[in-house]
Length: 184
Image 1 (tube, rainbow, N blue to C red):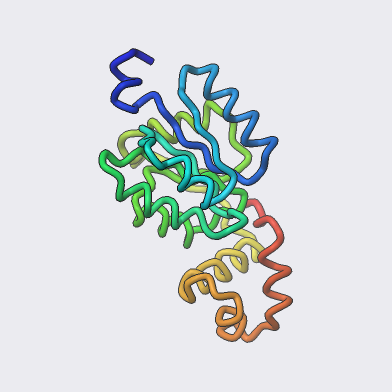
Image 2: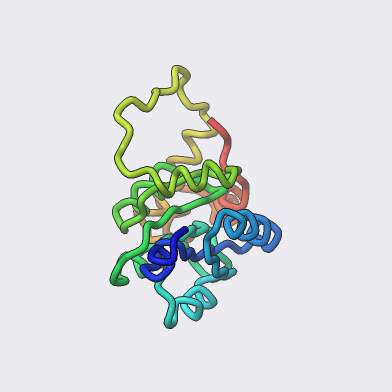
């Protein structure tokens, strides 16, 4: 990272994740690679960090204790200049990936991911038209997870309205949402 990059904010990064161990380990790995990293554990602390700080890049967890990381993605997209944003989540779904990109995220990556994979996703400039398509269809459990996430997004994250739309008991839906998504 050059002094000019640091002045322009390209060497600065905001890392928002509610897992303190992950946040500390990833923050240290990014600092070793020359980034000025500021961290936050939730939306409130992320807003406080952004007061007077405009990062060149941001890594945002999707599921935060006080709301959705998508709210932060929209806020970051409104900054001038807007940082390159990567949504990094253990709760990946097609619905949230689409929303993240619509809101201004440059990329979306499921956890677990290495610092190299995270930086590659952040730096990827152009879409990859040669990305291989999985030869196997997703499992029934994965399809259920994707469907729940899409209906949840359609109901603006309202669990009760989503449960009614799915004809499912609200507590059953909450249990399903608390689980990590099934891998492909």
